[in-house]
Image (cartoon, rainbow, N blue to C red; front, side, top):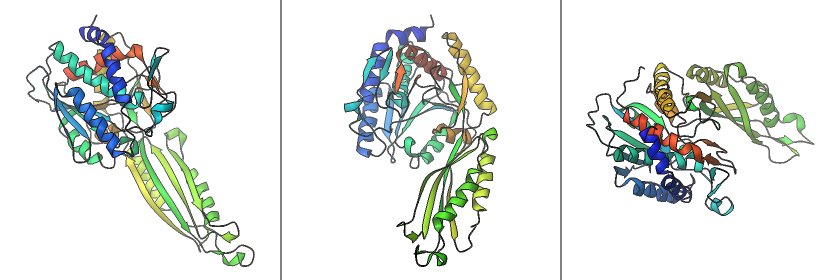
Length: 383
């Protein structure tokens, strides 16, 4: 048996115990104090094997003390995670951490407390087995990924520019645990319409309904979706008007969009900016744009996945690649041209849902794979 896999199997109970500690330290995105508590707990879990700090924007950054010369011939390996979850404080009362049906259950266990615990133990495996690592391995855990990474994006990009490759501890795709080698770019537009208010019974003709104008615009906007090209445009929230007997003076729509390529985002931006009112008594205001650039499957990403696939095969796992419409901090690093492999955290299902869970049997091979990727971090990937 592969020594890293054997080590991970031997330490599975300890890995599960750390996952439980992480899950039971609730850390919703809207609670800075709770997130800081989690980051401090994460620091305690690595204080004997890494040098760590909290950044000014609340992220956790550590550099592991590993066997080897650490010559940094090709740059370091950056590992990305996030400490925030979508679950509010108190969720554990109705959705406690538990072990049942071959799984671990609980808020944030899949996305992504287990992935963080996996990497901590992957680093312990390298140390205990005295496996040399030529380059530095750094882990950056952000506090706001679930809400768009607005505060942490610049820090992520800065750290990535010093790396030759990036691993992202997001969960894999499906119960097969497929790696993610492409992600859609994500953005949002807000369309505000201003019309003319009037009494709906007495002066209807003098008014100009912002709601009617918005409805017409939504028809146009919905036509921007192109499923064959993977482009989706979703008017998800609409609002407007004051009373049913008043012609609405204002209305607005919040619109999500997803694009597989950067050029698609540029095209959408032009189309939104070119919108014109059907009723010339109304005016339109467009704001927003791309938030996360797409993670496009580059030669470097393909090479990094190929290396991971070979390593997984040594562990008896057939690692497959996948693409997804969801985003992660890996979108930012891939857009910089840095080979990025995403979705190599836990294997399970139900992220952001009440059946969130991970497969216990997949814990050892994921820990071993992460250790192997770190040990061979001196590989120079083609960009």
